Image (tube, rainbow, N blue to C red; front, top):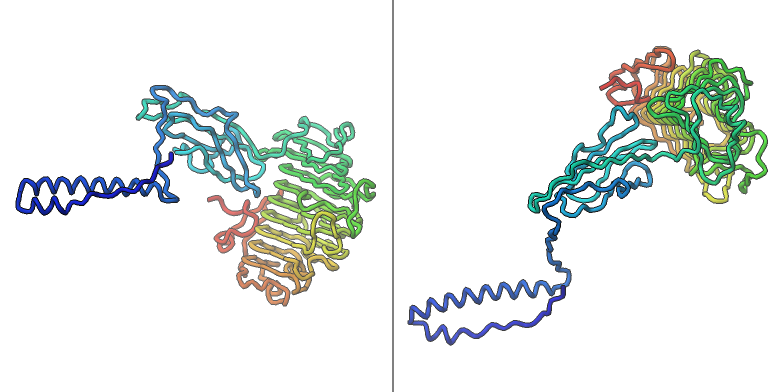
Length: 512
């Protein structure tokens, strides 16, 4: 609404005041006139204020919906948007005319029998959106009920609306319980696809594998159930990757009876380069940073050979991730568990995981990168100037006790490379020089340490901090973390300092 801004001039009251100076009745009229003038002046000021730029009238909207029983928002009109980093979700719904607000709850539904509230349960919301925390690969439910409005005699909805949703990759196929995966994919090869495919194993299901599973150049996720992991017994074979993103999630993998050769790996890069895979300027088959090679929330036991092996070919992995895993070896071999013979990795992250060996012996390396550095790759669509190695909140027990944690001939040694090792526990691992070797005895890369624990044969290994390329953070612990192996990849952490600082794999911290 536009106001016409006119000039207002008060009348001259001086003559009237002079005539009534000695007349009490006129004085009374004068006072009344002054009061009226002041009121009029106030109205004029408010009127002119509405013409000042930037002033906005406060308008109270009143619904014309009255004397009704409301209905909750329809499920298909409730929308959920996840933030780019996946840490937050925004839930929105359409306005219900006449409502006096909304009663809202959001639940984690990974275990449908035990919904877990996210944020305030039964929150009264005066608006049409809320924000909640989010985590990847999670099933959710939102419950919204329109509340009544006594002012308009509107009654609350008789029932709430429930909407189930998730932030998980859409399923390509569900593989039946009891399936031999090697036979399944021999009959149902993974097709070429420009979008990531997802093969889902049923919750608590039991599967076997006795031969290679080729994934080609298609990005693929093999996913079990988050709260009831699928079980996979592997007696032979590997997941063979031609140069694509690849993820294993929520699967317990048993290698105890594995009979394959010493070159087998959980993730095995194809020794024959796919002619359809384009090469970078540096001659590498590049798996971009946006398509991780990852093992997440898996338990791997009885491992005899490689966890990852590039077969001595020039594969360049942009993002290599091990997260929330338990990875255990039954015996050590004379080769690294993570082995890049001719290939390269840009960003490697090991987080909230446990690595252990049933035998306290050594192998060649935990991780070895033999050729060059990140700058040699030269991808066509990304800039690979520097690399990073990140280890956080992880536990190492009897891992390569008499050998080394890391070795390279250039990788993670360049100016601008970053090595971060924090909040982790090393017990009887890496021959008392875990940090020096992860740093490649080199001070050129940026190193960030903090709150790590080192314990070797019942004592604090001083070399971990006194060496020039050791842990120089000054925040390390020199006391026994009291890490006890319970068998079958399970541990107990009792060290008071480590527990108080919440270090190591979080799953071994005492229950609160």
